Amino acid sequence: MGKVAVGAAVVCAAAAVAVTALVVRHRMRSAECWARAAAVLRELEEKCATPVEKLWEVADAMTKEMHAGLESEDVSKLKMIISYVDKLPTGDERGLFYALDLGGTNFRVLRVQLGGREGRVVRQEAKEVSIPHDLMVGGSDELFDFIASALVKFVDSEGEDFHLHSGRQRELGFTFSFPVKQTSVASGTLIKWTKGFNIDGMVGEDVVSELNKALQRQGLGMQVAALVNDTVGTLAGGRYDDNDVVAAVILGTGTNAAYVERADAIKKWKGPLPVSGEIVINMEWGNFSSSHLPMTEYDNALDVESLNPGDQIFEKLISGMYLGEIVRRVLLRLAMQTALFGDNVPPQLKIPFVLRTPVMSAMHHDTSADLKVVGAKLKEFLGISSTSLKARKVVVQICDIVAKRGARLAAAGIVGILKKLGREGSGMRRTVIAMDGGLYEHYTVFRECLHGALNEMLGDEASSSVVVNLTNDGSGLGASLLAASHSRYLEQS
Ligand code: ADP
Ligand code: MG
Image (cartoon, rainbow, N blue to C red; front, side, top):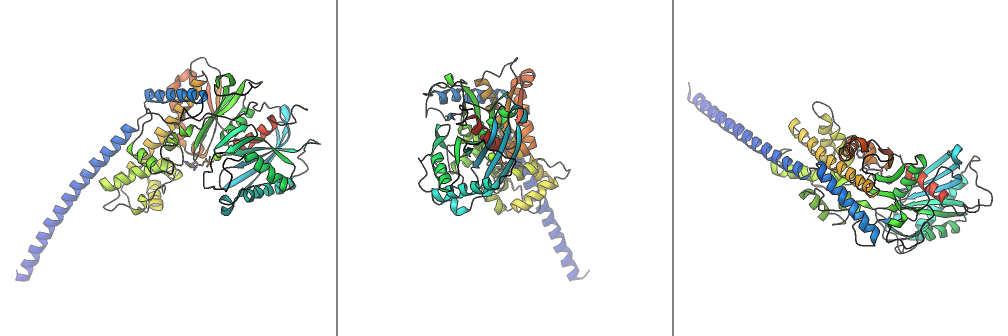
């Protein structure tokens, strides 16, 4: 063997030893990492646990807060807003009514011809109009003129098969999903703009009179007969379909609930008792909070860094706006502490709200053996190009923990309402919850967990009397039905 060959052999042997050492160290580090990841997951699972006893504590706390909120203003996290809606649709409504739904980047207008008990909804038509961004942050006249002129066009396009009672003005149910201090069924002052709207000089003003003025300026003979939020609209739409509907829940981007309360149980109500004896309460349950809620460090950090720290705690645990963001925060922790996605933390994972709930739900529902949907979504939305199957399984597990907690807490909230209504025990009447929102509609595991938790909490017998009915966008129809049931022509006819 020549000198050169000997030298080469020595170098090779040394390299082989070094590589082996690296592999061993890598394996050890990798084992350590997985052990640490398992510990983080275990802790998450423990902190998010919602055994049935815990759910009952949450439900009881919800019921207690409901009582407090009905007692007087500003003593509870639950505002328990009196909607002034004291006549829910019965099915006898007749005539042509309109609805206007404002509360997102689009607004919707709707007309419906109601044919009484036999005819029901004879026909309906809707149109969606997007709001130019400059109108969302401009003056109130401009915004309301834009809406009123869209209504003018909508009325102009009306076919022969819609009939207005002669001698009547058109009546409108206005779904306005911003915080409002209601002053009657058809008036209320704006507390603040949210969701990207910031209109000059509207806060403290009566929303309905602003709209009525704009309708007059546009020369449209139309009047607002009911001002509601989407949850109250959903309740009205649900009741029209099913007389046993007593509450409505929205599980979409945000969350809220409304229910029918005995007027004499509303201690803060100073008005005369309505003939029906009942008034719809808009709970604003997204703002519920309780020491019984299972909160983690991820939730606390999300809350502190949010635009409304301390507020909407229940919403931050269960709604579509936040579930994906909670998952992102856990993944970021794992990426930093356990190298779940390799040696470098994927930069996109550091961006708040990049992981939206529909993406989380797509990963959670991945049934392929190699979790290829999870792999593809991690790549597409977080820029993580290659992941091990083990890492993808961890991602699914986190989605599962976060979604289940949210769904089960939502179920506990519903049971809180049932308890307030005295409808949580055995031998109770059929009780229907009208449900709306993309989270409940599209996130199958979430929906099934919610139903499962209701069953666990109430037991087989009682839960067989509780029905959750998806009323796909019932709030638009609901608002027009409320215009009908609160029509000023009602006494005349
Ligand atoms: P909004 O609540 O804004 O009025 P929706 O009721 O349509 O609107 O709900 C939309 C929300 O539902 C989205 O913001 C999202 O959080 C959730 N969502 C929509 N699609 C899905 C899905 N496929 N999986 C899980 N959540 C979804
Ligand atoms: Mg909605």
